[in-house]
Length: 410
Ligand code: SAH
Ligand code: TMP
Image 1 (cartoon, rainbow, N blue to C red):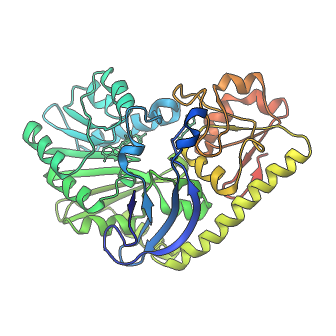
Image 2: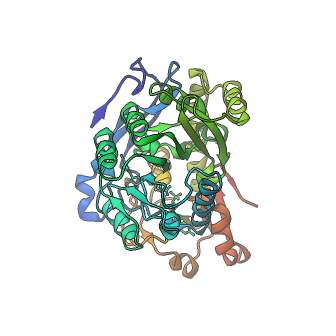
């Protein structure tokens, strides 16, 4: 357990802004014999006005979260497959990676959903991926993977073996890595003078706007804004050159950075930085107000489910997401509220959800034993899930969501 009462970047004291209580690992799906050893930690968030970094106070050790059986496979969503195909095309069209003389390194390459597009084109690439099962999936498609956690030492090893990179890319992993200064140093070292870092992560501005507090769980040690990304990379002489909002994962931001003075800066950078100041993403009070909305949201969700139960309604949840681990354990929602969760990930099926211990079944179960109401736990995949489950709605089933407020969908 790493206990950090100070900002991981600036070292200044963190202001405690949100307490989500005792929580298990977001992806800690388990079987009954493991209940006795289930790990819990205190999920509290702090904010530092100098670095503008919204961060967890405590985070479990990386090896507890990312290991052989890490259960999140990027390719479980068709929409995310398309997203990463478009992302890869964008990197190529912008000329960041040109031909077989270029070199791209991806941090957190998972099952190869992104790097596969470079492998197919014969572009030299390397995935950095500490989790075994997902790395196996990538390697089976001919993607080169190094099974390590990225840090400055690994950056040196990669440079010795392959040379510096034209592009370092990362999706939904930068926000997982606690030693943020060392991470930035390693990336700066690994990049050629004219190289770029392109990464995307769930966006703090959207979390505040939507009260999507379920984006906060063990793996997400940070929720970034452009303001905080700017502070992090300034310490290693890098600057934002572009910002592209994304609709994925319920609202994300794609950040492009280069070494200072090497590339032109798009107008989106100033616009989004100004918008963030107007939204108050640099002020502690914004997060204290957010915490009040979180408390109302948790109580409203549990209240809605209890009301439906009292009317004799059955409720299931769609998607055994790490995000929903936070909701169930914060709001006190368990098997008394939700009969089962369905999910298309074989590693999750047959297990129970972390902390709340709700059973997980394949998606077929949802079609065979449809509930009266279904909680959209994977709300970020709403369109895909509703498209796949039209019969549920046409037979009278209703979806419940908590974003941007708890309500039953029309
Ligand atoms: N990029 C994929 C996967 C995101 S999940 C996507 O966007 O869908 C995060 C992945 O990062 C996991 O597979 C995890 O094993 C990996 N990871 C965690 N810490 C890491 C680190 N320090 N260096 C590289 N990869 C890491
Ligand atoms: P995510 O919100 O972290 O991407 O996780 C989504 C979860 O939902 C993941 O476990 C896969 C599951 N899922 C399904 O079961 N069916 C689907 O159609 C989609 C898109 C996701």
